[in-house]
Length: 289
Image (cartoon, rainbow, N blue to C red; front, side, top):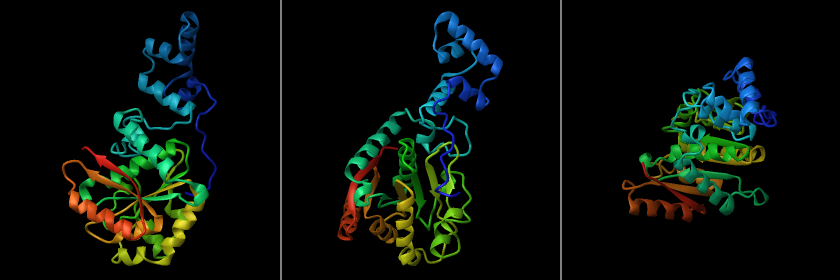
């Protein structure tokens, strides 16, 4: 989908009842019953609906999120994997922690005036939760109203197409090989209005060489001009030099580690190698799971 298409209707400015009717969660007759009870007992619309057993608390929260332009998905929505927890449980403790990371990154790195709009999410090992962190950070940035692009630059073991239920025929590898145009490789995620994803694409025989091509620099410059925030998922740093190549293009990186699993010496060596490459390591995320 074209990254520059107009914003979709978010529900902002409409009543909760209208949003729920449009979403098929409520019939007009049921809405009339709710409005009647609301008037008789001086209740809020949501409280009246729950009292009548016509809606659940989850239905009300979903409608409120649309009304206040804070999109998230209902449980059971199979368009996105449940591993993307920020898309389904925006008020959970883990997402609160992700929002805290988001705030720190907004303060310490992202600044359109000085050209800081791209960030690599890196880790030393494959099992550190790097792709999980990249996906969920992209969601919370989009929920802030930032036009956000998530790029899967792990051309060896990609996973973002699985997390966001996308085909992986066209993607970053296609663009770097000159076999696709940007607009046809990017997908806007349904239900998450300001989030788009560029999957990795077909696995190439020469990922490091592709990432080192000038076209990757040009691509990053292009997307930085079209989006407010660009999050780039990367391969494990201990297995390949790809992540350093990518981080050198984004100029900034956040490092992911897993509690009780990540090797401190390996992590320290990886961070030092990034810094020696001129990459600003602007934060760290410790996964507990």
